[in-house]
Length: 153
Image (cartoon, rainbow, N blue to C red; front, side):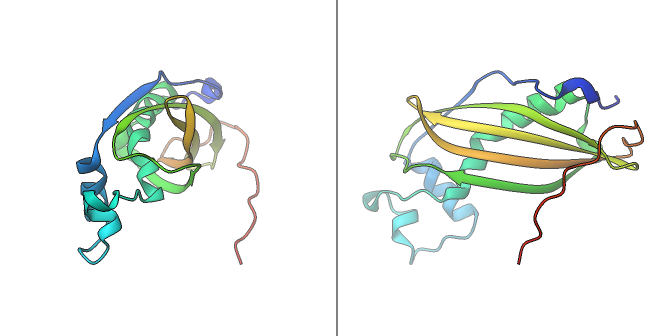
């Protein structure tokens, strides 16, 4: 399936993720939290939510957007990602996430897809993320090059 360069602006449906303190603790343990970090792994201390948890509710949205773009997982490479946390999460709730394709760029031998997602809890924005994915072997469609990004110091 070929990448559709005209898919920029396509939005996903709204996906929901119901979570509880066990979900938050399991995530923290999965990314390396230890028992000495009680705020992250013990329900009586919160638990505190790692900002990177914001990627979890976005995964199903990315599946939708990848399908809309015409990309497939067999040639997909993670390029870059940013996550912004706008507020604390309670120990349980239901997150709603929606995404949009903001860029399809021709890199000649591959295509760069850029997705943005936003996640809210009870109407309040809690996470935003931007994902850059590379689809190998799908370039050369004479599309635009990606914009220049600042070089980190």
